[in-house]
Image (cartoon, rainbow, N blue to C red):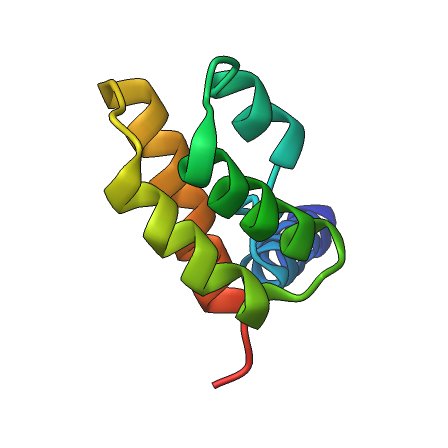
Length: 96
């Protein structure tokens, strides 16, 4: 009987975890800013515009500037992954 209760508790906990999701859906704008310390010009303006929109929870307004920044900024692999992850999260959070 005790094993059955423990098993059902564990199963319920796993189902709740799966339903709520365990992936990080937040956009860490400070991490993105830190990844691009020497950015200048229009690329910096676009990136800041997108990140400011993310900070204000305006994900629909963040998508266009972040897309534009990805085309204007010369990035290494790590920077590209960070920015593309942020863009993917902003698209997912923006209303359809």
